[in-house]
Image (cartoon, rainbow, N blue to C red):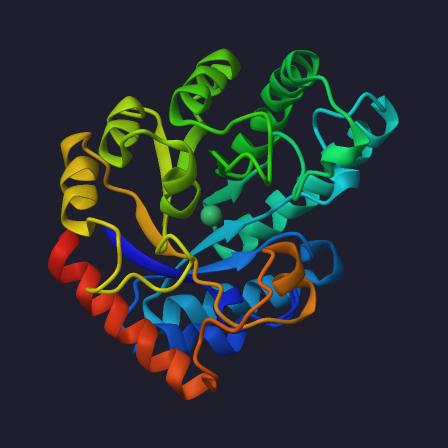
Length: 290
Ligand SMILES: [Mn+2]
């Protein structure tokens, strides 16, 4: 397993310049930097070539994440909006290839965070999403990209809340580059058993996010059994990335989207955040294993 961290740990806004994170994250002891792909349309091709050169120079792998904005909802009843979404993703996948990013995870099957007041039809939306995901998978395959469907808790999404729903969705799409994705933060709310949920994704798991129940960096005094989670991942033969996705500082669009209304960092500055991330990845390597 390779260990990574999502850049948004330090950020208040999605997107921006990921270059400075490459050397930083490598120095903190990570193998992988996860970046947000939702604003790739704003940046030039050269930005992504530069990102690739820097990652290769520092021996760091890159992965992508995206919580689709409402206008990029593959389950939408608005056919014109879905067409525009395919065009958006085609550009994202092309830029991912330029940057050397071969996987993207998130609620790609829907949008995020869901506005539950707007109303929805789970069965009909899922059917449209599956049909559109097959076409998106082919666009992604042209660029060597794997799409990872993140199972989210009920307060952020409705289409895939549990790992069995994730596997059902992935099986229905039936494309080799469409995989399941789990996140311990969401699993903690929805799953009877964290290890049991992992076992259900055997052969289908493409990406894995970790975090404590309150989205702090994994640590020894937390509530998660990281050793058991590591054993379960090895047990299903998972050899992908384990990316921590901590959100501890309030503010900006990031803080609003993840509903962070209190400071979980203890007033930490960037240096303190760095130290906690470094300690966390050392701890995970020790208890979850390589
Ligand atoms: Mn996640």
